[in-house]
Image (cartoon, rainbow, N blue to C red; front, side, top):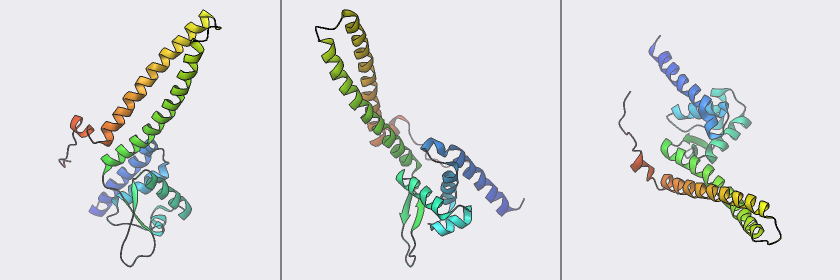
Length: 181
């Protein structure tokens, strides 16, 4: 196998692995292939160039770039004399993970916190109602205890997201910045 072919095979293996794992970001395998191809580009690309290389439609390519951009995996670039939009991958995979983790978990924390808060108010009103049975009061108290457990979990998760966003995570789990094979 000649050098160029071996080089392409090594790249293709990584691109396919990205395509197989991109679902962790909520994206499709074709978007993963596009991201992988862009990652190995040493300069920004237009949608036309990406369409030609991957054989995807320009519409699919545009949708994928938008999805990648929303997750901060891809960003627009500027090059003198080029009128079409250019895109390149962001270089910081650690920050990309933090952004994805934070976006998804902050949303989840917010949704759960609002639901728990509202339910706890209703359950506390119910438990202090003198007209309900002791049996129902016991069930309501069990639910309150369960919701307090969930509330504590989401408060912990919110603090965990803070640790990621502040980059304190790197004090706990340092980045190995040595380049090794």
